Image (cartoon, rainbow, N blue to C red; front, side):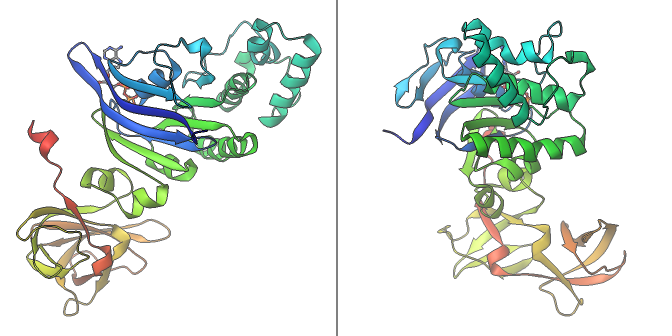
Amino acid sequence: MTLNIIELKNVCKYFGEHKALIDMNFYVRRNEFVTLLGPSGCGKTTTLRLIGGFEHPTSGEILFEDTNIADLPPYKRKVNTVFQKYALFPHMDVYDNIAFGLKVKKMNKSLIDKKVKEMLSLVNLKGFEKRSIDSLSGGQQQRIAIARALINEPDVLLLDEPLGALDLKLRKGMQIELKRIQQRLGITFIFVTHDQEEALTMSDKIIVMKDGRLQQIGTPEDIYNEPENAFVADFIGESTIVDGIMHEDFLVEFAGCKFRCVDKGFGKKENVDVVIRPEDIKVVGSDEGMLVGMVQSVIFKGVHYEMIVKSGNHLFKIHSTKMAPVGKQVGLIIEPNDIHIMKKERVKDEE
Ligand code: ATP
């Protein structure tokens, strides 16, 4: 049996002239927590709706364990969805909301009772059976929506920005809780967010999207440490991105200097994007650095200072535990391993 529970093969989705998804290819393993991540309008919800059966692909295949389900209606898929706006029934109490799916299936009452209790315990809301929906907080409503989806024992749970309406503290708590539920039940979760920190915190695998196209697929560590293009580097975490040109012998030139770097097979004189993370730039005395610049701004962030240093025409964002005051000349050191060279991805912008 295949390890893939869901696979998209060359999937395109057009709304009239608008190309919402272009040639999407990815797979999701059984029991994986996979996140679709990208800016607003990049096609995350459309991808989820295709998997859920609420949209039909313009072309391509959607496989569930190797079977094409593109023509299967939502209720015949072993997939359930939790939407951002929970979609709870306001006229029913908590019990009836959670039990709804099983009542529709005409399951016997004592079994429904048992399962509703299990679900309430799973989402830490024991004893809430008789509460009305409008007496619950946003976080509690969210947990009821998850319980209602999980009681049907789907193989895959689709979650469309389920934490979007919660305040930051509650959101962080729910991130941990959702991950715990997913690990405990061993259900495959496909989660949509535009929040990179949320994606890094929760996911086994992240699928980064932009303008309906895949940008990169990988573990949180892969995506953060080895971004494949400047968009991913900029979207996931912070970075300084500057234009560079490759020279022979593992050398890249940017900001008026030549730096040693790790060779990734770029051609001589090739124009590249150079990406550097703020924590990878070391601030030293102005006579010690490879680059020299002037401190433009300093903000205390608790664990580090965030500084902007201007060198030539370039602004470098730096996280440092040591502070240099605004106006001071400093040197900057960047290790070869921390200079990420990327192919210029300007094709889309020029179209
Ligand atoms: P957000 O984070 O804002 O929810 P998203 O990444 O989920 O965005 P989608 O909702 O999938 O993006 O939309 C992708 C693109 O397809 C957008 O440009 C959107 O306007 C367009 N689109 C989505 N649904 C339809 C539709 N039914 N008809 C026409 N265009 C649509």
